Image (cartoon, rainbow, N blue to C red; front, side, top):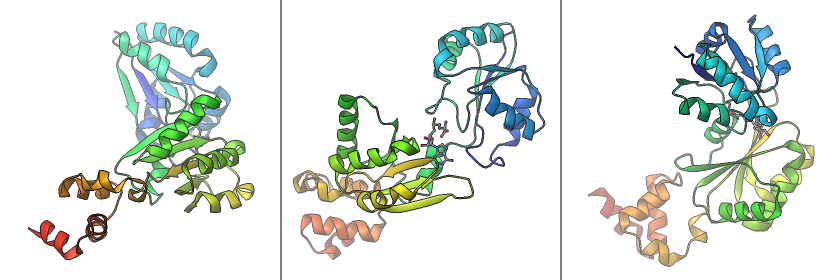
Length: 274
Ligand code: SAM
């Protein structure tokens, strides 16, 4: 019988952010495939776990996934981990996971820390609908395309960025999407964890003094940027849903609809009370 492939999330800073199940899986598997074996060894040593390690990173995914597949087919259980957080989320994993599924091997996710979800939930920006874009492309044309996508999205956008590229990214965002509200989440789960909830211009003023790992949560395009006609073509219920998805409460929504439709807010209120 073939073994199982466990995708194990590990901490993104604070070592206490690992689940009991994750530790049990790491203790029980035959082999741990790690993005950087030295990094994972530190984690294993901390929890007094001793296991054979094999490297599995971006530049050897094709070759190493074949080796992992052979071992899984021989019946070995393997845990896949990255340096921090959830494997496969801007981290290696996708190739071996796809191949394992194609070979009918059981793939088991072991939930845990993921930087983008934690940045999003504490951002104060709407969590009802969001798009995760990972790192912006470096290629000029592709980058411009993504920035345009951000500009036109009504949904919250989540971006990862390397610390030394953050200033440049904020400048590009400002140039293309204008001065939108964002939350910069920094050093999540670590001693200097910080959320800066402000507009792009003000965050750009501070960026030179900010250190550590960072994520951007960008508010979706607001109603002011939508044409009035588009909104007024919606049914009242759709209009309501439109603002609800942006995180507004009932009172605010009624006020906004009344303003958009140029009617008294009591008129809208009466429609939703029935
Ligand atoms: N797989 C990881 C996850 O589950 O979130 C993401 C890995 S990706 C290579 C690294 C990027 O994630 C960083 O550049 C940063 O944008 C974000 N990140 C990771 N850990 C973070 C932390 N503790 N605080 C803020 N951002 C973090």
